[in-house]
Length: 295
Image (cartoon, rainbow, N blue to C red):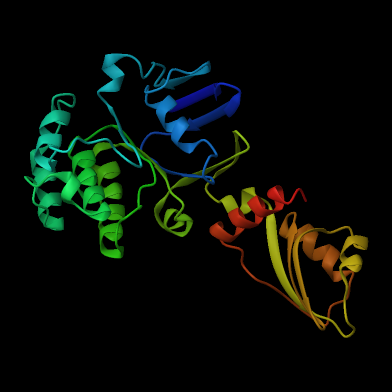
């Protein structure tokens, strides 16, 4: 288990994370979401021992990631890994396997072959997607117990993304590993993650198996016999996140659980009313937009 307690970190006067508490169960795939600058990459670096927390702590089964016995089980694939002009996929594998005693050359060979990569060709000559494929091969070949993937799908084509997701699940199943994935491809996280964490305004603002439920929003479409207006929804005690009125038709996103919102909408006596499911990505965007607009 990974446990984060009261984690805070700043760069100068710029607060990045503030009093973050989080538990990640072993053998899980966790999706980490948040806009650029929300603190995802900083959190990864704090969790993997790249940065030392200014306040709070990160524990792996009760031990610090700064201990050598723990660090050998952790692999971070950043969104833009460093490489020199001479670095090849093969030389990168040789380097990393000195730090990971359980590195598996067969896994490396399998993924390199799948992507048809020339392991002796300099990474600087690869496209962005090909470099990402090479990094993926290295990451899985190290067989880490804890694998961190920052902006995991960036630069990968649809076929490579499919293979990547399948490999993540296989890695977790075969090694009882824990994988934490950050990505702006929210819909793809929804398809294969066990749990989710949302970071916003320096803190974890939602977590669990369903972020749609955690952000506590629902969406309805309605038709009225007379032309509606925004004021009537306010009078009904509804907290409107987004409202689109077209003649006598309304599509609205409301803050609150479905049952209480439905009860309040029924007091407006719409002629027709149906719920429109609000998926993970839409809920995240609506929540973020609402916060930015200060609603």
